[in-house]
Every structure is written in C-alpha cells, then in structure tokens.
Amino acid sequence: MRWKSARIVVVLAFVAATWFVPATAQESGGRPNAAPWVPDVRGFGGPASGGANPATGINLQTGQQGSATQPPASPSSPAALPPAATQDPAKADAVPLQGNASARTSQLTDTGAGTSWQPSAAPQSDPATTQVPAAPPGPPAEITRVSKTFESLPSGAGQVWREYDILPYTSAVTGSDHPERAVVDWILRETGQDLWFHEPFGFLSASRDKVIVYHTPEIHNQVLPLVDRLNSARGQPQLMELGLYTVSNPNWRATALPAMQPVQLASPGVEAWLVSKENAARIIHQLGTRADFRNQASGRAILHDGQQFTLARRNPDQFIRTIQWTPGQGTGYQPVLTQFDEGFDIAVSTLTSLDGKTIEAAIRCNVDQIEKKTNVAVPVTDASGLTQRINLQIPQIVSWRLEERVRWPVDQVLVLSCGVVTVPRGEAINRPLGGLLDSINNRADALLFLDYRGPTAERPDGTTASNQLTPIQPR
Image (cartoon, rainbow, N blue to C red):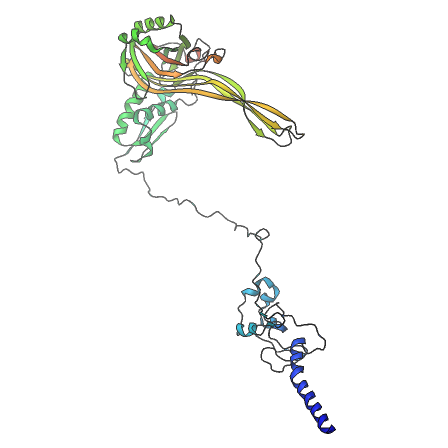
C-alpha cells in the first residue's frame, strides 16, 4: 500500500514536471522567480518578437530548439537589415519587412491584460522643429514665358515707320529740359491715348531732335499737320490773360448770355461760351459790382507756343488727423500730423494754327479745399493708468476738376463755367483763398476767362502775375 502510494506520488510529480515547467519557462523566460513577461515593442527583429530565447534557446515562434548563445538570424532581425536602416532608426519603417509579418505579430500576446499587442505608429515629426530643406541654388523657376515672335515689326495693318524732325521747335524753347514732351502730349491729344495700347501695333517715341512714329497712314496724316504747326511757330512766346472768378448766385447769366455764344464741351456739368473782347471786359466789370463776386486769381502769362504752363496757389494746412501706436513713448499713442495742400492750380497749353487765326488750348484746373474740420477727442491711457485726450480734426474736403480741349478764334475770349460747386463755410474766410469762392453761401459758380493776346517779344522768364500767382512753370 505504501509502495502504491509512493508510486502515485512519483507519477504526479512527473506529470507536474511535464506540464507546468514549460509554461513557467514560457512566461518567465526559463528563469525562476522572474518578473512577469512584458512584450518588447522595439521592433519585430528583437528576441521578444520571434528570435530564440537567449536563456532557453527555444524559438518562441516555431517552438523549435535553438542555440542559447547564438540565436538563428531571421530575415527581420537587425543583423539581416541593411546597414543604413540600423544606423538611422527613423528610417527603419522605410525598409520592407520580409517573411510573414502576421505570424510575427500574432504570437505577441499580453496574457495579463488579455489584449492583443499592436505595433506603435511611426513617430510623427514636429513641424516646429522640422528642418525645411533650403532652396536649390541657381536662378528661380520661370514664371512668365517670354518669347521672340518676329524678326521685324508687324505691318499687317499697313504700318509704316516715319521720323519727324522737331529740332526747329525744340531748339527755340527755353526754360525746359525736355521740350519734346509737349510734342508727345499734343500728338496723344490729337490721336487719343488708347490707340497706342491696342491693335494695330504701333509706337511713339521722341527725343529732342525727332519724333519716331510707327503706325498706319491714317495716324501719320494726323501727326504731320500737328508737327507742322509746332515747327512753323518755332516756339514763339505767346501772351495769355487769365482770370478765375466766382459768383455765389448763377443769375449773372440773365444779363450776360445774350452777348455770349455757347460752345459744346465733352465734360458733363461744364459750360463754355465765346464772347468778343469788348463784351468780355463789360461782363467782368458787371460781375465786379456784385457783392457775391470774388476775384480768386487773375494775371498774365507768357508761354512758348505748344508748351504747358501752370499758375498755382497752394497753402499747406497742418492738423492732427489720427493717432498711431508707438510703444515706449508716453501713453503709447502719438498724434499723427497731416498736411493738406489747400488751393488750386491751372495748367494751360496753347497752340496756334498755321494761319494764326485760331488758338487751341488744353486746359486743366484743380481746386482742393477744406470746407470744415470736425473735432474728435480720443481718450488714451498711459502706462501709469492716467487718461488723457488727444484732439483730432477730421477734415471735410471739397474738390472740383476741369479738363478740356477747346479751339476758338483769336479775336474772342473763351469763358468756362464749372457749374455751381461746393465752397468753404465762414471759417475759411481768413485762409489764403479767402474762402474760395464765397464765405457766406456754401455754393458758388466758378468762372474761368481765357483771353489770347497774340505773340509777344517778351520771354517766358519775364512772366508777371497778380494775386500772388506763381510765375510760369514749364515742365
């Protein structure tokens, strides 16, 4: 009986050694009292991912016995990977894995947690620390395609090349470094500017000696008579009487219109009349007797035929219009001083005809004024917490423009009306313009008188003008 009991104990011990020892070796790596097994996530090629256990020599994938000191190399082990992959861990994911990847991952099971292990995702680079590769040296990539389409100038519309001698004109003009610019301006007025920027192809160029025109014969037929007028006059100085007046009430027309002949203009709101020199003097005298009449600018100007002169009167007006943030200075906000050039300028370019019976003028008039200023107090707080106010002045600006080209007989006077325009209120009466136009009413009729007096022996440098008009200003 005792022998049987001893035999049963031996059998139980053999069974225990057979069934429980391998399980313990699998969990603890064949080492007694080892720590619980933890999967190694360093990669599929390490000992925990399918290589032979270094302690037992048992391959954890196949269950076959291997060398405990020299585990067999697998295709996925680090020893089998290319050297570049082992040197740069960040590139390990770029190396294709060999063998059955699913067989390698299916055996990595955490028996304690009961969840299947999943390989971690590839580390993401931080955009803030990622080094952006520098642009390759050399010229930048082509953006605009530039091609050479022809060896000669296109002439599909019958364009021809002609050079016009303008030296007889430019050599007689004094006081201007580039008298040829006036020739170009008159050609553009005669032909129109858009013509040179659309088909058919053409161009216009000028030097002090000549003007080069490449265009159709129709355009040359307009250019030649114009250049003839300039060369014929040879820059002869011309005398022009000019007057800029304003009347608050447009009822002056009631007595003046019967003596004036209307002229059609292109600018909307602008009227023009022709009047004899005698009637023009009578109308100006009648206007001068009115209480709402203002003589804003009048005088005589001497200019070379074809050249442009400018009569101007501008007065700078400075005021605080806004504030600007300026750290480290006082409250941080500093007032911004604004300058507005209040006043007017009148640019006139005249050109006589070949027979001397008519005069043509290109007229541009600009008037800019401040009607009133609105005060605005802006509170600002400094670094110490104190609040102060910066007073701003927001201007209410009024302007009007006139740009026309008119031809009339030399024995008559051209009168232009810009219509009833906005003028400053009473606060502007002490400014240089005297409150252009009228200081009591808010609207007035602006009138411009141009009286051509013919050629003169005086030179443009001797120009005189009244009412503080600036002398001639050739371009």
